[in-house]
Image 1 (cartoon, rainbow, N blue to C red):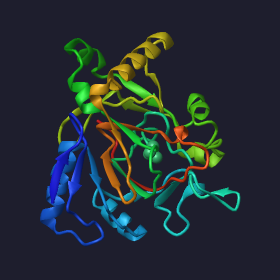
Image 2 (image 1 turned 45 degrees about the vertical axis):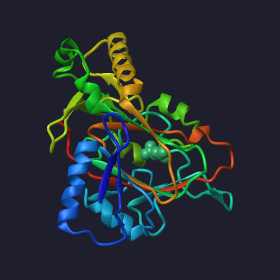
Image 3 (image 1 turned 90 degrees about the horizontal axis):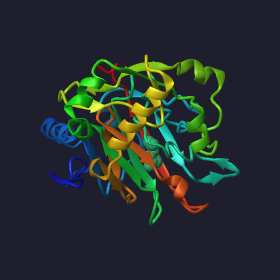
Length: 282
Ligand code: SIN
């Protein structure tokens, strides 16, 4: 197994590893080290069945089902279908799982620890996934800003209007039951990755609606400043997919964004996605 760093500060490709085969403890330990060091890992040329994807995902922790049960895989509900493909007039998956910067499931009290995304069918060009290294972005803040953020909390919400508009209604309105599962939650604006102790900026344009305790203008201005800082090119990486790629990322120290809305109509792209449960951020 060989690890190749792809981005300036994060993202690495793992070479010479077949994830359809059982891995020994030594390999898992090397993978964990690479994951903590790089925050996003890419495994190429994989041929995985659904149970194999779930098995490798489970290494990162227990799997949880996405709140949008209408897009669960028919036979394996722990897999969320993300797809632009329509069969018999019915989308086979969620066409756009996030063309806005976000950290997965930050809208819950216990956001996802990790996520995986497997390229089942990918276009020849486009459909890239963008990543942001929110730990490197935190490190680069001024001491004054770090002090200002200390102790602040932000509200996260899965049902904000702007998000509905930016996804062109693809996700659809949440049902009452889905809204009940996703009440607004507060998280620290700066969180600590539990295993590495790395601190990161934990607000995202997709789900963070305000800084708690600040007047609306001040909250909007501070969030705008933090988003602009995080999304500077030096903290971002564009991942270009090949069929059979599997990505696994740490949601405590990254944000990501899909670009599927830029694809020409009719372009086929299907991904399998798993969500690994996490703990309340500290
Ligand atoms: C996501 O936001 O998790 C999906 C990313 C993608 O489809 O590129």
